[in-house]
Length: 123
Image 1 (cartoon, rainbow, N blue to C red):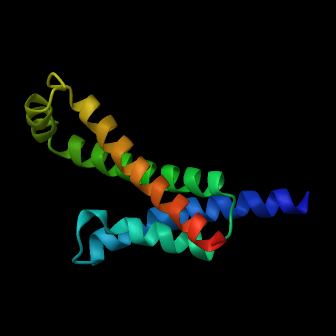
Image 2 (cartoon, rainbow, N blue to C red):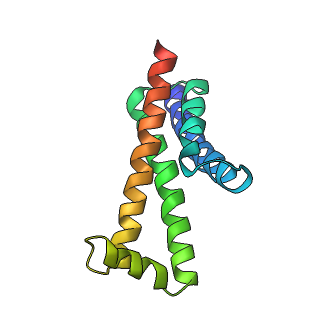
C-alpha cells in the first residue's frame, strides 16, 4: 500500500511541478514558447516514474496549464483574437476548437518531453 501512495504522490507532484515550471519559464524567462520542454525533461529525469506515468504527468501538467491560460486570456478579450485566428485556420471560426487545438499541442509536447526524460533516466 505504501508504494501505491508514494507512486500517486510522485504522479501528483510531477503534474504540479511540470505546470508550475512551465508557467515560471513562460513568465519569468525570456525564452521561446517551447522552453517548457526542457523543464519537463528535467523533472522526468529527477523524479523516477514508469514511462507511461511520466508521459501522463507531462500531458496533464502542460495540457491543464495551456487550457486554463488560453481560456482565461480568450475570455478577457471576448474571443475576438481567437475567432480571427480560427477563421484563418480551417476551424470555421470556432474559438473553442482553437482552444482545444492549443491544449492538444501543448499536452503532446509536454508528454513527449516527460517521456524522453523518463527514457534518459533509464539509459
